[in-house]
Amino acid sequence: MNNINLPNKTTKMRILFADDELPAREKLNHQLSLMEHVDVVGIATNGKEAIALINELTPDVVLLDIQMPEINGLELIDLLNYQPIIIYTTAYDQFAIEAFEHASTDYLLKPFPIARLKKALAKAQQQLEQQRAHTHVTSCAGEPAFTLTESSLNKLVSKSGERIFLLSPSDIKFIKSEQGNSLAWNGETFNHLSDTLDQLEHALATHNFVRIHRSYLVNIDHIKEIQRWFNGKLMVIVNDDVKSELNTSRAGADKLKQLLHI
Image (cartoon, rainbow, N blue to C red; front, side):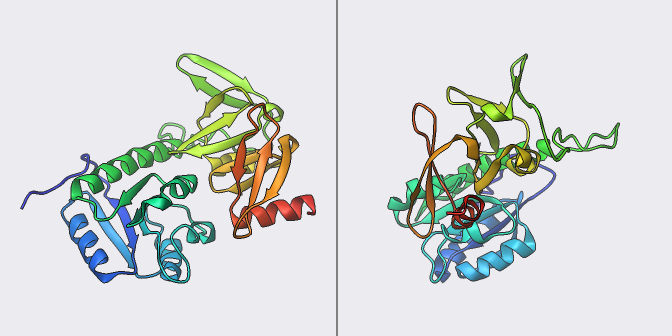
């Protein structure tokens, strides 16, 4: 038997997976057992169980079946208190677009070979390393490397090669998280920010930014239109030239409705 390895890391990737079908769970568990840099910390058999285990065990990565009874893999994301890296697994390719709209790292179409699983986990490993770099604590100063520690922030710092740009929060339409990166849209270009969306949400609260989705922070001053969407969600249209459309989560829709009294 050949042993399939992820990149050589001293810390194992903590994985939880959820699937309501026993054969699928057994196969995935076997595939993961062949990877020495993986540690399976939990297995869920339905959506409700997955929510409880993810919040309790805080895994690095969750392999999540989409079609599960009661709460499916797409719906449960908005119900989590803790946000891991998500890789969706499903037998139905029509869910691919919606899966990536939920900021998943990858999408595996069943039945998938172990090589494809390994590729998805390698991508997740890269994203983990980026996240850990953002929360790195410097050994010499003993202070967090976060640049956003104040409750209010007057400038955002964006680095591009050797160039450093200072951005005014009022000029930013929205900020999105994409594969572990925070990207600020000013209506013309995306600017890479070194901080996570969680950090930015806190630091930009006094600048009328609101978290409408686990992947989106929007500046309320730049919202042009709000449309009702499906499953209690909303579609937010930004006042840029391309009329950018941002879908909310159900929790984000409730927050926006309460904030705007709509």
